[in-house]
Amino acid sequence: ANQFGMTEALQQLGLAAINEGTSTGNSWFSNGEILESYSPVDGQLIGKVKTTTKEDYEKVMKSATEAFKTFRLMPAPQRGEIVRQFGQKLREKKEALGKLVSYEMGKSLQEGLGEVQEMIDICDFAVGLSRQLHGLTMHSERPGHRMYEQYHSLGVVGIISAFNFPVAVWSWNTALAWIAGDVCVWKPSEKTPLCGVACQNIIAEVLKENNLPEGISCLINGDYKVGEWMTSDVRVPLVSATGSTRMGKIVAQTVAGRLGKSLLELGGNNAIIVTPDADIKMTVIGAVFGAVGTAGQRCTSTRRLIIHESIYDKVRDAIVAAYGQLKIGNPLDQNNHVGPLIDTHAVEMYNKALDKVVAEGGKIIVEGGVLSGEGYESGCYVKPAIAEADNSFEIVQHETFAPVLYLLKYSGEVENAIDLQNGVAQGLSSAIMTNNLREAERFLSVAGSDCGIANVNIGTSGAEIGGAFGGEKETGGGRESGSDAWKVYMRRQTNTINYTTNLPLAQGIKFDL
Ligand code: UN1
Image 1 (cartoon, rainbow, N blue to C red):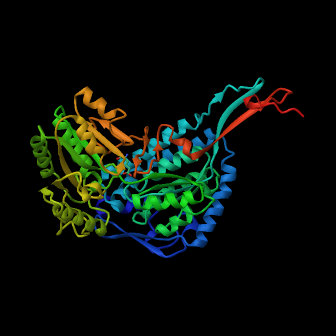
Image 2: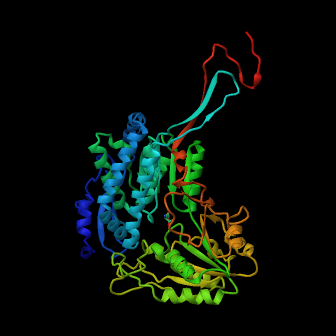
Image 3: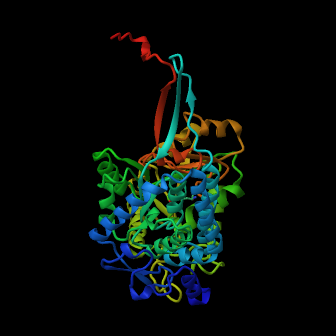
């Protein structure tokens, strides 16, 4: 990897000495066992970080809750200024951080840079928002009374994120939480710990330059047990968790058990409907990028194509031909389209999915397989595969985090395709390819897609930060990022003020003493 300037990148991110397993970033988060990070790109050890012990965790929580007491008093536009400076630092480190994302997680360098761009974009969004944390004013039913609502800072926001977007998802949460006056405690995926430390180093620098307490941004490392300390901790009013539906159910129940709030971004099973009026060229680009981008490891990855029978053969052949052009290899090499899966466990899941679809009666039309030989030493590189399948297959109903695309056929009206699209447990992203206005509007109507994201003539992945991001059903119902997603990071308070010398009661109730 050094040929791609990885050593310099690690240096720029303050990770040069991280091979020694010493404490990194803030002194209080890393005194436990050593966590090693191996790159799926070449199988090499990139660095080691220490995990967070229960004792460290207590120090973190103390530091965070203390920091909250002062941070919430800082005017929101001034907090916006801190986020602006953070965005500026990200611009300076975009190349280095994008490279680390690509090397530690395995996505293409373009996508790694894209992820950092999303961080920069959400910072810009949050800076503007820091002057727009509006509540409403209402007319009181009582004379001489004023009624309004305001949004106050919430407290410590716990963030649990997944390996597939090792830096961006954190920033969607933190940028909004910080302008809202909250402080954040982050548990990144144990599969991408260095990305976590790199981000922490960047924000720690900003906080230091502004004489702000480091507790505003805290990092804790380790596996799900470390996450559990947060989900069961009453000092954490909001837990934002991204990952599998299985994990989300546990988080939801634990947090609900203490009546805390959770924001869940869980699995997707995203489909593109291809109608007889689709532009085939656009469909191919949207579907192939959606299915093989990030090696099929986005929660918005395209898993199913629902194609009208009248154009089925044509679309299938065009997609199969496009798969023939795909170059699989080192994601830091910009000639390659597809990088490795995160680890060999993911490869196992991919193999199992392919076996299962055949066992259930599906037909593989683009062969999969694990690549070996020069450049593929990590054992994490797989061939993107396509199978003709049925929506009712158990494996099709299941989210496999790998580049396996299922082709499904529909006949008749677009409603039949919408039924198939909605006929899964997940509800994150969906798309229709059509130039037919009636079909598009039916897809977007209340009787159309049941997902949190529904696109026309765009694939399922690559959502912009300006919209609210999230999904329905087993996807968990949370919304992050743009629109009014900021509201979840604040507590709403309704205030009624009486400026008369009488005390009339609401609802006209008479109560004379
Ligand atoms: C995820 O996969 O967890 O829409 C998030 C997209 C990205 C975010 C994906 N903006 O593909």
